[in-house]
Amino acid sequence: MAKLWGGRFSKDIDEDVKVWAASIPFDQILWREDIEGSIAHARMLAACGILSQDDAAAIASGLTEILAEIEAGDVTFSVDAEDIHMNIETLLTEKIGEPAKRLHTARSRNDQVATDTRLWLKTEILGATELLAEVRAALVALAKEHTGSLMPGYTHLQHAQPVSLAFHLLAWYQMFTRDADRLWDVYRRTDVLPLGAGALAGVSYDTDRRHTADILGFPEIADNAMDAVSDRDFVIEYISAAAICMMHLSRCCEELILWSSQEFGFVTMDDAFSTGSSIMPQKKNPDMAELIRGKTGRVYGDLMAILTVMKGLPLAYNKDMQEDKEPLFDAAATLSGCLTAFKGMVASMTVHKDAMAEAAKRGFMNATDAADYLAGKGVPFREAHEIIGKLVAYCVEKGLALEDVDLELLRQISPAFDEDFFARIDLFACMNAKRSEGGTSEARVGEQISKAETELG
Image (cartoon, rainbow, N blue to C red; front, side, top):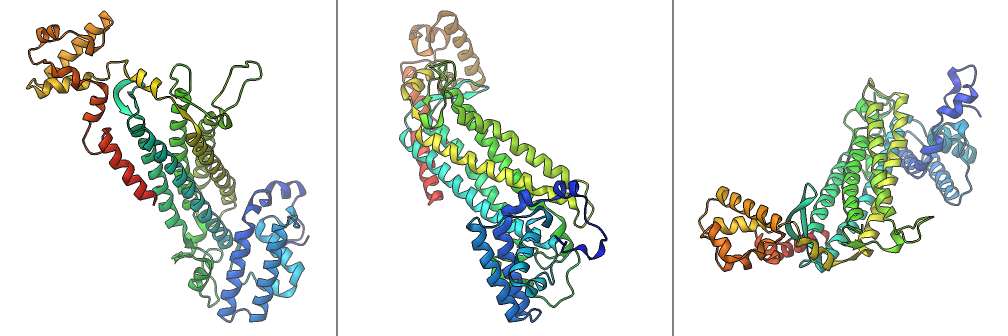
């Protein structure tokens, strides 16, 4: 196959290198965006009088036919044509002849690939934010069922203070809300058209780049032609945002894995998101949660790969930048799959409220409230902290809970103790005492749920 760039060369590229260097095995995913961009480019050229209306119509018609043929599975891409851009142009030339040879006027593969990638990524970001909205909605729905479901709150994975399951789930919700915000921020910087920048310096034709932008739905065009083709920071930003989101997914899955163990027993994963053992008949493993936790490393690797590719490149375009595609495509596919699986796990798991409430009784989680009780009676908080610390040590030695200690003994420790102490350190009372905005009291959790529902629309 004759190369579309072969005029300068006297022999073809080495056959082994041809296969090794070709990007068509992975960049063929951009076929729809490449066709969309080429049709818009042809229409702009015709509107500017650079291309005849007949040629533009033939190009648009031919590309539309190729699109339908690809959708039908009737097209096999060729390594000889190197990449998706030259494959599409070769197919178009075979279909309509001479007009196809005029399509590449006033553009380069450099601005073409940047445009295709941005078009593709815009769609991916919209899909990811929609999945995040579904994940967040699933968390809010579960939270609404468990505003009064008591569970241990942890620091250092040690029992800390009593909270509700709803409160805990809403912490997850907040993390994923920020992930969505980050993706929207990436979308804004991705939504800039590089097409028309040429190879690096602009083009010599009197083009109308803003007309192309209007056709393709870009609100802005790249201000500098060299920058337009030579940076992939929008790709880096997306993978970075995806990596942060995967980190959040991994943390949530780590908790689900712990919660579904016999030691915790807080939840049971649905059969649809679990697997068994080939040798141990009793096993029900939280494999999907574990896979999400494991796949987080893939996206971290994708981020390190693209950062390393770009770190030493001089302006403008360099062939190294072909290596942006595989990390980008992998990160997007991994994020999408993990969000889908996580949503299903959360929506289908069974919560064991009694086990959570029983666990909350252990670990002196009402100790802070006991200190707050004394502080409310006029004891300086640092002194109150020491009193309760010693009382906890006594209870550990005697195998008691704070609420089991006799009032007479409490009064010997401090005259500030009174009958109302026991009501104050009831675990539900402790949970509902956290009435500061954003706290775990049922009223404040209700406010958080209402706000989340408003955000989700």
